[in-house]
Structure formats: structure tokens, C-alpha cells
Length: 309
Image (cartoon, rainbow, N blue to C red; front, side):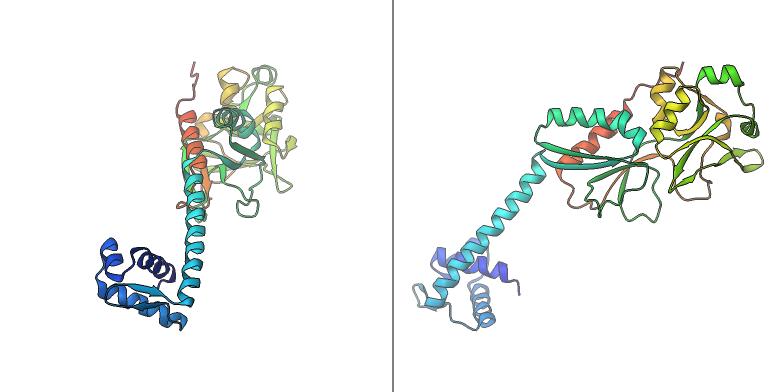
């Protein structure tokens, strides 16, 4: 028994002043309407309607129940209207988390433009190189490199990515360009820190399979944007996600080295990729503000100018 549907049918019976008329409006047989009304009365153990061959009348309990049904159905209509409006209007809170470097260089300008075009959006941006729990922090969208296959979030790939070793031209002029990955032990390397632990074991694809070395960090930081800035200033060699340094590569502030080794700070045996994803919690109820921002992100990275010269 669906009480809300039966309440709606009861209201229609009253409005139509008859069981058969309500049935015709809903495409139901009179017997079906009668059975539903009897079931409703039985459920509440009260007489709601008195019937004659020509019309129906409400009992005193029926009159009270009719007013209560009207209020409940109106409240439900209002709730549905609000939800549908939220889905159809680009407005409301938009809570995003992104990694520090990617967020400052790409997400902040994109979000600024998005809010300027949709002034009813109320943005909140969490920039952190630590994984932020979406449920605990009430986050709508997470922009991350790589997604674990057992991740409970819905994830869409925004762009292909990979990690690169990079340094400033000035640093390489002074210290020389490493020819093999083992040469890195003679260089100043810049290490990211996660959960208070330097990510100092770097992995490389070679003809002999995956190899790794443990670097001795010249500098360490838990903020990827600072690692990149140190590399630009000539402090050493950084292992960075491509989209974190693409602007610097285009501007020649940084150059990549040892690309043939496909460097990474995770083993390829670890099931976490390097591509750029956007993740969220629920596919069914994604509001339009989130959907539109996802579209904007995909377009942005698809059309991003890459200077290959």
C-alpha cells in the first residue's frame, strides 16, 4: 500500500465528486478506485466517505483527513519544486577540493570565470595535497590524479596525464643533465611529503623492467606548489604531474629530463593511475552546477594550448 498515492487519489475523488469520475481522470476502473478507498479506510480504521448512487460525501473524519492530505501533498510539491529548481538552475554552493599546485594554476582561474558567469554560485575551494574525505567535509567535487579501482566514488577522467622529472635550465647548465636515472644520486632532488613522510623512492621503466632508487632530498615540502617553485628557482630536480608544470614547460621556465624512463613516485604495481580525474559521490543526484562545472573542466583541458617547440 502506497499511502501518498492513496492520499492523492482520495483528494482527486473529492475534487471530482465521485469515484468513477476520479477513475476516468486517472485511467482507472471504478472498482479499482473503490478498492483503494476501502483499503485506505481500513488502514486508518475510520470511515472517510459516504457513497450514494449519485455522489459522495465526506464524513467529519474525512473532512479533517482531506485538509491534512492537501497540506501534505502541497508540502511534497514544494520539496520537489525546490529539488528540481536546484537541478535546473546554476546556483547554490559548489564545494571543490583539488591538489595545491593544480588548484592554484588551473582550477582557481576556471572557477573564477564560472562564478562570474553564474553569480548565484557560492564556491568553496579546498586546496590540499592530502586526500580529502568528500562525505566528512561535505565536498561536491574532488579533482585528483589517479583513482583507485576499489574507490567508492564515481569518477570521470578529465585529461590524460603522466609524471615528469623537471628542472630549470639554469640548474641544468650549472649541474649538468642526468643521462640515466642512476645519475640522480649526484643531483639535488626535491621531494614531496605525504603524511609526514618524504616520497623519496622514485620508480623508472627500463629495458630490464621497473627499477627504483631512493633519493636523498635536498629539500622537502608537503605542498606541491612550493616544490615547483623551488625547481623554477634552480634549487633542484622535481618529480611532478604534467599538468602541474605545463605552464612552466610552455614558458621554458622548466624542462623535462629522463622522459624515456616514464618516472613516477609509485610503482606501476600499485593500482593508482596518473591521469586527471574528477570524482563525486552520487551519479543520480548530481546538481546542474556540478554537471556544468565538470563540462567546463573537460573543455578547458581538452583545449589547453601545449607548446611542443
